[in-house]
Length: 236
Image 1: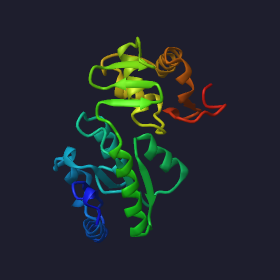
Image 2 (image 1 turned 30 degrees about the vertical axis):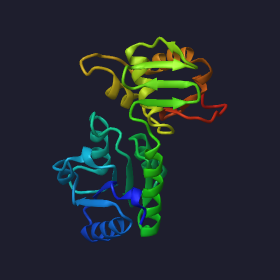
Image 3 (image 1 turned 180 degrees about the vertical axis):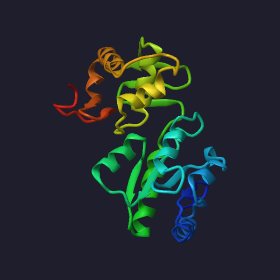
Image 4 (image 1 turned 90 degrees about the vertical axis):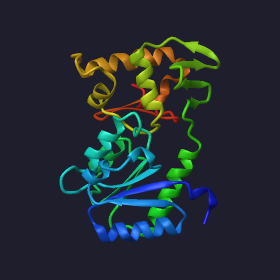
C-alpha cells in the first residue's frame, strides 16, 4: 500500500451491484477510500465535491453517466474532478463523446480489475501535479485566482470570453469540446449566439497567444481542444 494514496476518495457509480462490490474491495485494498452509488441520481445525493475521482458507468436506468458527467462539469465545485468511464459502449463515437465531456479515461467492459486499478493510479498521478491556482504550458500561464494570462511573464489582454475559452481548453488538455458545448459553458444563457461565434473568438485568441496558437486545435466535425503537440491539419 502506498501511504500517499490513503487520502484519495473514489466514488464508483454503477447499477451493477456485484461489480461495485468488487471494485470497492480492490480500491480499498490499494489504500483508497471508496464509496458506491447504484445510480446517477443516488450519486447526486452524495457530496461529490469531496471525491478525488469518479468511476462512472455510462448506461444506467434514469440519468446516464454521460448526463451526470455533463452536469458535474458545469458545477464550480465538481468540474475538475477526474472521471473514468466504465462502459460496454465501445464505438468510436461513444469514446469521443466521453472524452468531449471531459473524461480522463475510458475503460470498456468486460475489463480486468488490474487494468482499472492501473488506470485509477495513472489518472490520480496526473491530478497530483495539477495546480488549483495556475495552468501552465511552457511560457503560457493562466492564473485562475486573478483571472490573468501571461506569456513569458508579459501580460496578455484577453476578453472575459477569450479567457474562459483558454481556461477551459487548457485546463482539459487533449479533451475535445464541441462548439455547442463551449457556447453552453461560456456564454450567458440569455445571449443568443451562433456556433460561428466560437470560431471567431478562437481565431482572436490564437492571435493573442501568438506562438501558442498551434495548441488550439480544430478537430473537423467535432470542435476544439488544447494540445501540446502540433499537427499540420489541426490548426486550420
